[in-house]
Image (cartoon, rainbow, N blue to C red; front, side, top):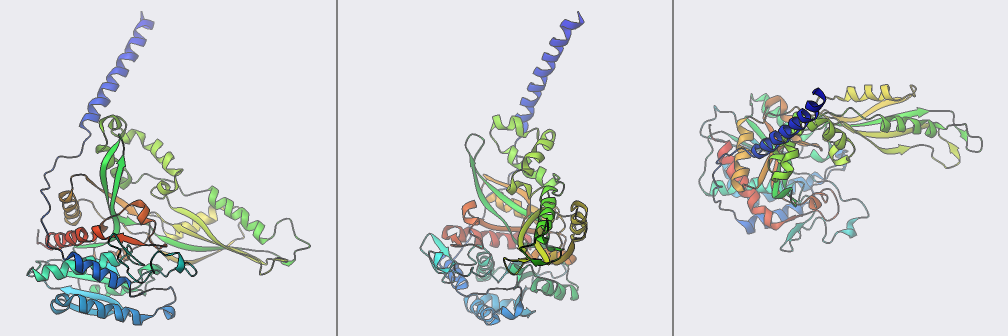
Length: 493
């Protein structure tokens, strides 16, 4: 009798589990919130396009070596901003710190409230030597063909800087005055992973010395990415709001050996010994972890999937081990769950017939929040079997802290994005690259990274590369977002 009951019980349990999952999936939908509709904004579309082209035409290129930087181009850029935005320069106070970093202060009606800050950086990366001819239009021309504006900085990030300036200029034209003070903070050297003597740090220290604590910071970071997976996630847009950013460390690892003539080589030269070090590093990656922001990201996407797909996505908590294993093996996804290790440069002998007395590699690490540069050095020592290696930290910047997703500032960003389109999926995420925002942690807890421009993944790949460009059609919506954000975020409540 018992043998007959067992299969029936198992089958019954299975049916119940399937039914429960079906019910769970049916309820696994986005929270129903009436965010309203976006206010209609006045934007001078021709002016923003023309000014972005002009901004791109001024090559404010930054280099790690300050002596290589042509600061006259930054002075020219400042002059351009003065001419392009007269009301900003009439109403806001302007201050230059470091060599060329800018602080604009817009006094509100209630300066007792913590101010808000909008960040941008003026500098751009150089164009790789020998690639100038590969551009469809010269990289520092700012050519507008009616569909795109081309040039270095079109996406990173003169589009963002000009969008902010356009928003403030237009708000002033409309007679708007904020309640909270508003700061526009434009650094000069974000692209070189600025050190403690960089522009953003100098701006922050200037504000801190005056006792200023910021309510919130908005910097570059996420964008609006179209997502269309037929039958799974139909015609949605992922709006990623960066709530933290990874750290950065360039570490030189060296092995010494007896040199000599290549005609009498040892079993392993210094380079051969170093090859073992590289294998140890690449074969022993940092531990992967699904942090809360990853779970939130998958949950946000999962709730917007079609019903059949939600039968799986509603069980994300149970599938975490599988998700983590899959992500570990996909490079664009692996960087979301662990500190990454990238061996990028090598150096050995100065001649083909000379054994190297010292061989070195430079390894670039991008640390997850919570992993320090010291942790990386300890990891290298631990996983490398060769204990005679030399380790030198060439450059490093620690990972940022996580900003909360229940703050007033984050809610403002989400509300404005949802007002623009109900097809937007707003989700927190981790910024892979570095921004100036992390330098403001001593005076602000609510730091977010979001650029309100709709672009494709293909266009994003042009950032720092050949044929960097931005769709003209996305400029006006970007300015409109900044106007709405300043109105809403600068309000008392």
